Image (cartoon, rainbow, N blue to C red; front, side, top):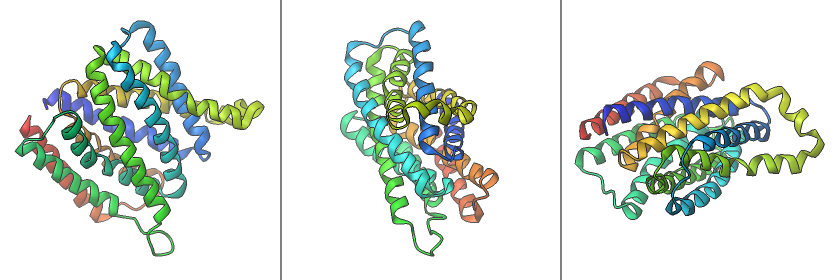
Length: 283
């Protein structure tokens, strides 16, 4: 992983945490994700006018990824509804890197080397620390429904990460792949919202339109950077590095949502940074 690739993934981490925070801030989660996914589809349509059409070999991956993303959106909405942003976001994102490491080894033949494996392991330790901090609900016990939804979200993230990593490499154009992925994955949530609200749809969306469309732009930027990086480095370290967004998410939760941060998260963030250093050393 070169410094340029690392910088792109770190920028993706910041933009990803930002759009998730915007989605969480919109009280009605279906409204938020309708605007973000629908806005992503509009951006994808514009991009598709100027980008090469992905090669034939990429289309099975595009279709599979779109289906997984629909499940991911539903699980993420459920996670945000059941748990705090500073709880749901770290668990969902922190689950993914280890699963990606296993899937990438099995399906992409990417077995990590010594430094790379150490970096992923250390990063995951930091991510786990961030995820476990604040697990206890208001009743003094973990909220198992929120935990289960967040863990399932993490598995869906790992699944689409590997599918898209293989798909973008087969596409011949990272820009074309992200454009058509946004088009395909973004349709389902707005269609469901239209079916549910019918004539009330515009009225539901209007008060949050600006925030939602900004979130859409951040979402496309975040994942576009990740897809570009996946054409230039292995999937596992990119996944681990991308999840440094958890640090940003924890800070956003503390500053804007008045959620706890605390010393354990500071330590966990330091461990995460050490893991990033090991992965860059491997590059």
